[in-house]
Length: 153
Image (cartoon, rainbow, N blue to C red; front, side, top):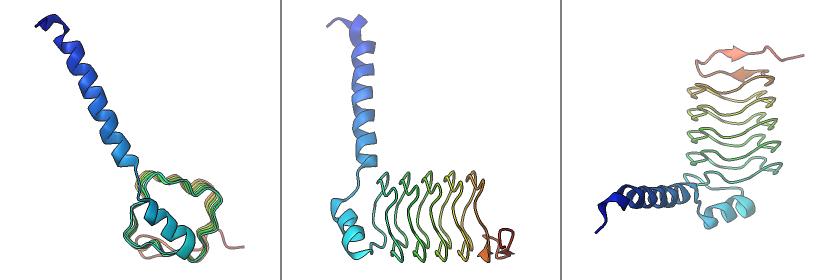
């Protein structure tokens, strides 16, 4: 065997293995997606990296769901139950989250730029590294429990 080619061979194998692991991490259950689409209900399901841009998800039940990297830009999530959901790195850019339950949700590094968080409950939520620029807060229950009325007119 020509051992001089071994590092190149191993590097290619490691790249293929990494790609396979990344692909499975990005996968979601089609049944879970259909449950959200048809029933607006999918507790504790896996919908990471799914594109919900502009979707009307008013009152959707997604408590405990894994929504890492999901794309909700411009989506209507008013009165949605996202309690305990994992929204790490999710895009909620200009999403309507008015009246949403986000208690205990993980919003680490989430994009909430321009989101409407009026009347939302963020009690115990993790907002570390989240982009809240231009977000609307009015009667918003913040992670520490205090009420934020900064954006009320």
